[in-house]
Structures are given as structure tokens and as C-alpha cells.
Length: 442
View 1: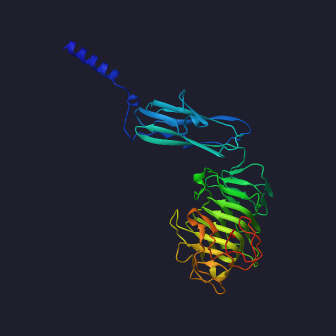
View 2: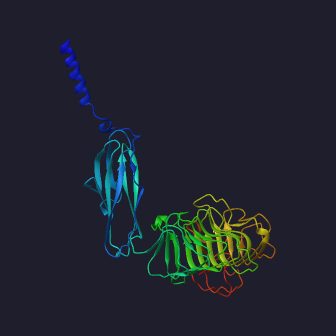
View 3: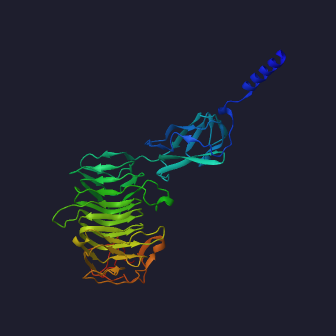
């Protein structure tokens, strides 16, 4: 009996010491995933010469059992400007890394970029790919590879001027204070990150030229992202903002590109004047204006699921504009032109322009505005009272590829009388019988 008890005791001891703790037991369960200290590693260093910086990513195993990470790899491989070190092991590929339950490992990420390479993309992106128990997870890597002016959330000093010395990157919303002005000089390139916006309580003046136009767009600059919708918050004009001007400028990739709140005044002087402006690729709308005064000449508004122009009240004067939308990349929620709640107080004058799209009627009017349309191609049953309308396909060169210049058979050619606009959207001179829309046929 004593001998049996001793044997039983020895067996219990061996069993106790022979069992692995839970955190050392390897699990192949597909539900066991990794977690990370962050989902994007962003390097915002300004590189004046060859630059190098290292950041740390913590990779957690939140599960009670040990897991094996089959591979940790840089998507860009050996050609990536990034490099990784995982628990002392160098990439771009690290295989079969085991992480104990409730434990973590460090991934050191380094970037080495030569900003003297003029062909280098402005935003240099890559990612780290993790494969664990057939689960694929990704951490984004982003670096600005050129010197630039960087702005986080701030109110600009009163009467600020941005010169064309290097790009401007807005990582959050900037504000122009009441009574203050931001002047953007010819040639400036302004790149907007995620939900960044320009909040105008004072005045915005954008002075692009034919040879040095201004660009305001998403900071995702690869070619495939050029037509992305809703990448930043747009330019917002508050009720205190008047006498704004934007010339020779392209604005793209916003949610709503230009949003204007009501300005109560007795005059018809424009709160915003647009000249030689293209507004493209938005997710909510191109121009969304409450009761304000607007005017524009040589304007292209296109590529949005919502209205190209929404104007609820005030006065609008438009010359040689092309308002056009097709359901090529999205389902269209609204026609090109929406005249809403305060439309009975709206006076709109349209000269030598094109309103077109793939809806049966490209105007939605809640009430009856005073609408004067002259020498224009207009797709709507709502013609206004003093209109000279030609309801015929304007025959764009290639609407599928968003080329809204005119074919040589377009009825828009030589349709109009001069209205004091000497050239078109891209600077082509207009002749004695100018063409309707933003483009003069060449």
C-alpha cells in the first residue's frame, strides 16, 4: 500500500510538471488573430536630404494560447523604401514567428528616402502583411517623400499668403478667421489628408493662372486614386465669409467640394466668384450653396452622385459652364442642378452653357425660381421664361473617359453670342461666335 501511494504521488508530480502552460500551447484556431498598437504608421518627417527614421509597432497576441505567425512581409518586398526588423530578425520577410499567449513582439520600421528623386511619388506608401492561421492582416505605412508645408488643426495667422515654393499638406482642418484672408498664389499644390478641410470665416483668394494653375486634391497621388470620391472635407464658407475668389484651379476628391452657408445682405455682389475652375470627383456634391450670391465663368462641374450645383436662394450668374454628370462609376442620387427650399427667392442667369447627363430631367426645383437661360444646351422640361434652349445631345468627345470637349459635329459649336469671356477653360481663345460650354472647339 505504501508502495502504491508513492507511485501515485510520483505520477501526479510528473503529470503536473509535464503539462505545458496554456500560453505555451500552440493553437491553430482560425479565430485567433493578432492585434496591433496602431493600424497605420505615418512618417511626417520633412526630408531636406537623405532621411532616415525608425518607428515601433507592437504586435499583440491577445489569445490565451501561443500562435505562430506564418509570415510577416513588406508588400513592396526588397524594392520598398521601408525595412522591418521583427524581434531582431530582419525583413523584408520573417517566417514562422511564435508569440506566446497574452504576449507581444516589436516590429521596428525604418524608411530611407532620397527626396532629390524628382520622379518619386509625393506620398510613399507600403504595408506590412501578417499571415496567422490563414488570417491575413495589414498595417499601412505612409511617408511624405518631399519637403512640404505641413498643417495640423489650426487657425491661420491673419492675412496669410501661401507661395509656390513647395507643396502644402493639410493633415487636419485649418481655419481662416473672421476679417482675415488666405491668399493662395499661382502654382500652389495643396494636398488634403482624410477628413481635412478649409473652414473659411474670413476670405479665401486663389490666384491661379493659365500657366500656373492651382490644385487642391487628396494626398493620395497615385494615378488610380485620382478619381476617388470623398477623400477630404471640402472648402466650407461660413456666414461671415464674403468676397471670395477662386481662379484657374482644379478641386477634386472632396466630400462636398464647396459648401456655402447663407449670407444675409441686400446686394447681389458675389460671396464667391469662380473663374476657370474644374470641380470633380466628390461623394456628396460639387457646389452646395444656401442663400448666397455666386458667379462663375469657364466652369466644369462633373463626377458626383449628387448635384453638380445645389443653390437654394440668392443670385447666380453663370457663363460658359459645363454641368454634366453620368452614372458611369456610381448610382446618381440627384440631377445636375437642384434648386431647393428658397428657390422662390433665387434669381439664376445662365449664358452659353451646357446642362447635361443621363437623367431624363437634369433639374430638380422645389419651388419656381426666376431662371433666365440663353444660348445653352439644356436637358430639362423646366426651361425658365426667357430661354433659348437647344435640347440636343452636346456630343462630347468621350463622356465615358470624362472628356467633355466637343466633337466637330456638336450642336454647341458657334451657338452663342459673345458675353465678354475671351477664352475657354483651358485658355483657348473664343471666336466671334463662341461655343456653348466650358470648352471652345479646336
